[in-house]
Structure formats: structure tokens, C-alpha cells
Length: 546
Image (cartoon, rainbow, N blue to C red; front, side, top):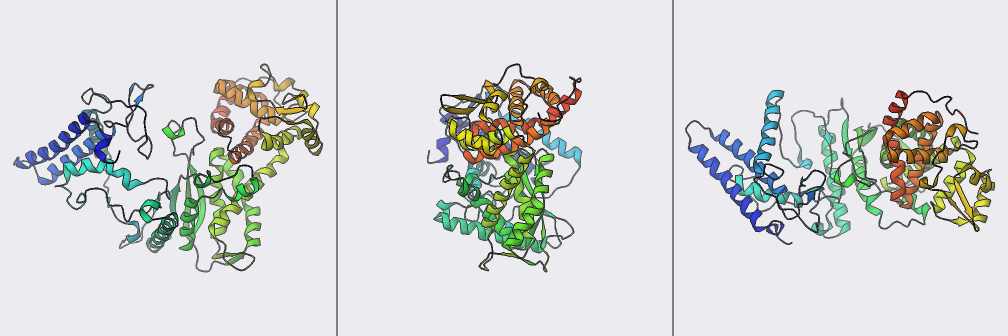
């Protein structure tokens, strides 16, 4: 597919071309009516053209069929033109998804709701680097995600139909054959020539935008910056999962680094972090994956002109002092494990950005990339410190899992580790979390755990088994998991903490399948607690470990 027409069948091209022609014809006919003003005719033509471009979303050769909803899905299930193996060509007059009349009905409902709201709005299309305002303003922005999405290229899909229908209404806006792309602030190595020049273009542009925002910002109010970009994505392919020490530092992506570098270089400081649940769980990219559930909102203010200079040692000490409490608050707010590393950037960068400069041991200024690596390492250390709440068997299981997962390892190695953790292989076999046979040892998977397990009668109750029994119960349904949560009592909260720790291990090791269970347990926690409180008492709750 090298031209936009290749995205459509001949029938679809005929349909959309005729619709676009009729948009202009309708406007001309309305203008000929004496009682119709030019503004009214232009407005109607605009809504009709938007309806045509929306109809194109359901009438292309990249549309697939939804078996659950028994209708066509749109072309853009994600921000990309995805390859499909077969496609559905719908009847555009069937009164279902892809029907022009259905689209127009949706537009009409929205207009009616706007009329009821009686709220005046104003929107302009401007370059963010060339913003101007006679008064101070408040900013809330969702900036581009580095090289993840080619917004302008994707816009061409709709632009070609809008231009065909209403170019006469907006001659300056729709004057080019395709969407202008040269000034788009993304890191596109094909457009800018190389990865390095694309990075430089993005970083320079972000610095220019943040500098302009600083000049116009009303200092009485904070600036909020939304960023739902997973910080490990950009370098996942190059990471070596066996080199865990390097992996801690390599979890910073170029997208996060350049975005935050532009923020810090223009005298902004992070003042707070709001993880906001903005992502729909049933969205295409989120189904069956460890996709981000939240956008991380960085609350920023202009850094005071008298901000001091700190050494690397000062920065590390401040992180050690402030990060544990910040992370504990995030966990209390039930942030998903998949989002924890993202959210930790906020309090970490709050420490880094409060200084005019952080100096390395050789006197050179520390860059954002180094700061992010230190923040990620500090996050791992804080989570590791939480292991003090775990029993000896769980600490052994966590260390073994970090190395082997649910695969087998040598008995001798397991015995040596158990001595260090003040437990024994035989004891853990008896506890029901371990299998030992033929000189090999492995952790039991949730499917292998006892079917009739009861924490009240378990003589060697561990946080490890409590966590995995909860995950297995959640697979059966929220009611089953809530009943078990109630039986576990105070231990359940520690099991949730273990889920955070296990998720970070899985993410570092790229064990996506195992990670899903730990992430799902934390996400479901508020509902499980509510359901557990509604259940009748089962007798004494487990208050301490054996």
C-alpha cells in the first residue's frame, strides 16, 4: 500500500467520493436559499464532512469484524494503520457501524448536549512553540510521545476526505494536498534523517515549548503535564535480561529523558505526581497485556530563581529520605504495579528538579538520564526493603523466583539459599510452596496448589502462598477472591505488597504472562476489599504468621 487509495476497495472509494462531492453540493444548495446564511451553510457542511471522515474509519480495507459485538471495528483501534489478514466490508446503509446516518445521529446528539450546557468555548490551531497571549494563562498539556506516534501521517487518512468536501470553506487550513509535517514535534528519523538528528529536533522543540510556557504561565496555578508513555518501551529490544545490574539503569527511555530534560532545562520543577486512571481496560492495546492503566500527571511550577546546587551525594540522600514515603502513598492509593515505575518518576524528579543543578563527583552537571537511572534503582531498593515484612519462606521464594521463576534449579543451590534465609527446603516442601525431586527444586505454580487450602488450618502459613492462592481465586471470580481475602485478614495487605515486588521482578525479566496475575490482583484490590467487607465473618482472621 503506497497511496491512500490503496486503503479502500473500489466500492468504498465510490461511496466516500460521492459523499464528499455531495457535501459541497449541499453547501452550494443551501447558499442559494435566501433564508440561509453563509455561516450556517458552512457549519452544516463542516458537520457533514466530519461525518464522511468518520464513515471512512469504518469503510476501509483495514476494518475487521468484532465477534463479541457482531459489528465492524474501526480502522483505528490504535494509533497506527495495522496490517490485517482479512477484512470486513460493511453495508453502508444497514443502520449499523459504518452507516453515514448513524454517524450523523451521533454528531447531532453531541451538538444537542453542547446546546444544553450553554458553555462558550474557543479553540485555535497554533504552534506550541509560538504561543502568545495578552494575559497570563494556565497550561494543561499532553505532549507528543517522542517517536511512538506519527500524528500527522495518520491524520492524512481523514484529511483527504475533509479536503475533498470542505476545502472551499477552509481554503487556508486545507490548502495542501496532505497534512503539513515539517514542524510536527515528534522524533521521526525518516523525516529528520537519523535517530540522532530526530532526538535533537525533539529535545530542542520541547525546550522551546516549555520555555514559552514558562513565560506565559500564571504562577498562581500549577502546570499539569500528562504522560502515558511506558518508560521501558524504547529500549526493551536492546536490554539483556540476564544482566540485571545494567537493566536497572537501562529502564529509562529516550522519550522520557528528552521530555524531562526539556522541562528541567527551562527552569521548571516537578511539584507533585497524580497517577490518573485514564486508560480503558477493554481498549485494544490493553487486552491480555501489561499495558499502562494510568497517565502520569506531573504537576509542575517554575523553579525559584534562587534554587541551590546539590551534589550527587545530596541527591541520593534526599531520594533515600523522601522516596519511600512517596511510594508507600502511591501503593496506598492502589496504583497498578505496571504503573509504579512511571509514577515513581514524579517524586524522584521532584527531588532532582528542585535544584538548579546536581553536580557529579567530577563537577559536571548530572543529566536527566542519569537521574532517571538513579530513581529506578532507588525504587528497586525501596521495594526490596519492604521484604522485611515477609516471612523467611517468602523471602527465600522471592529470591529463588528472581533467579529461576517457576523453572527448576539445583537442590544444592536451593539448600544454600535456604540457610542464608533461615529456612529449609524440606520445610518449604511441607509448607506447600515447593517441589523437590531428583536433585531439582522448583516453586509450585498457582494451578498446582492445594484445591481445599484453608489459611485458618495452615500450620506454616506464608505470604508467598497467600498471594498465589489469592491470584488463583481471582481467576475463578471476584467473589471467591474476596472470601479468601477476608479469611486472610491482616496478611492480605502484605500479600498485596508482595505482588508489587513480584511484578517488578517479572517486568525486569520480561516474564509478561506471570506479571499479569500480580498486576490484576492489585487492580482488583478495592473491589475485593469492598466485597470482603460485605461477607459474613468466617471466624477468627489470621493476624500473624506461624
